[in-house]
Length: 246
Image (cartoon, rainbow, N blue to C red):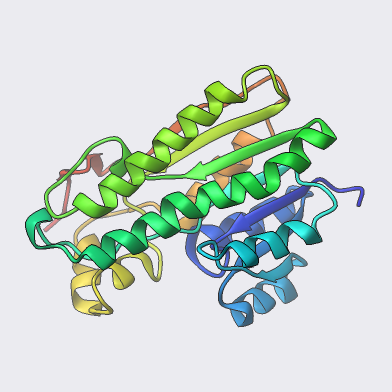
């Protein structure tokens, strides 16, 4: 392949789909990876990306993806999500387990699988999509904030361990992003509660805003590493402080 290869996980919707679309427009050969192959195939028909069925919680699935790649210039660890808003003393352990498996261990699996190809070809960039929840905690978010703090720690540790090697590491930490599924999934499919998260917020971020940040980071000159981008809508000054119009 003459185009640099980019792998985007969680590419069937939201930030992942927007990032796959944007990187394809930037000239990357994009492997759009997720569990829902039917959605990926529709994205492929629209953009020319390569659809790949992937479960980041499954070692064999990750290994199968790695075996398909001749090289990898960019890995965007976007697969993730949140479950529940219960207080820490009442949360479901299975929700914590799922959030760690997808957000944290999924990112680790992908790095372990694709980093050798980056080092072999003398270039690489790991982009971890975390959250402002990885930088501050809030009531009702214990499991998700814990998982995103761990993913943030992974990013910072990789940056140290890869110093001196031709692999960049970037953490992009979005604030409030309105996508079709994040809050809906977190709230067990309750559409009214999911809509209420964004009610009165004039302009929450959208998936394309985060895709724009990814494109900026990965298209900098090779000597430039964007360590961290924290991105919030203007209406959100902090996780707990959001301006809402009447």
